[in-house]
Length: 378
Image (spheres, rainbow, N blue to C red):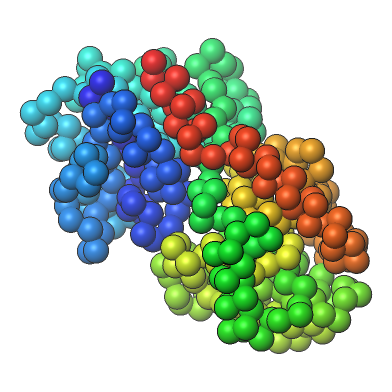
């Protein structure tokens, strides 16, 4: 088949600026292109050509400035000017693109992948949403939680829904106990930041209040391990090095913490795996209903035990004692209690982490994601 994948307007493909959706598309694209002719349509970037073919995949990039309406106009213009027919068009996370795409491509099959709650009536008018669902062949969701949110508003979507969990690069994110490369990355980064002989607790993510890292910083004052260090990796947005009010607040809390807190700022997407190699425990602190943060897969692939919150789709990756669930994400005490347990039982914690690694090898790799997408396409 001749297939068009349409990414969102926020970040480019490949994921040189980061982004969960961009990472997802990049993870499966070359595996899918073995079976189908593939074009990927995404936003422009000063470091990427507007139109190029790489490893047999065509990438077309249109200006958006991160603005949906501008991007949608560009998508429609591209489809109107094309000289070829797409058998299937796979749109990512933008249900509001479906009807404009259908108008320009009346004979193409259309599939939609949902990574967020974009069918919420605050984000799309119900009349449009009904029309979108009736137009689509299938709706792939990143978690059962996202599928259930769609059903809450539009029960008629049920027969079209399918959950396909994301994946991770098993070579890049690998346990330091089992990979010489990861061990060298671990030793180098820990030496660089004076973290030798420390128990490193890791947070990776965008720094905003709904992501909750301030609660984890507060929890450090209640840890019983004087050798514990918290490392907070992330910025206000992808490729954004500015210090927002919230980041200033986090740094202020960190300065007053009774145990060391390292804030790295934004780390480039191709470098972030090094921090997973350097860590001993990973923590996802989401206060909001997270669709299902991909950092869980990265932590598991790196062999890290993890804490995550009972919010959104996050609990769906607690399988076979590979992590612990935080029931009240606003409670520094609950984080401290569970971290104290893990840090007091490091052998047990490492076995928990290796169970997560085995799980990613079985379920959460890109080959499996690609095969499931191909099965939906038929």
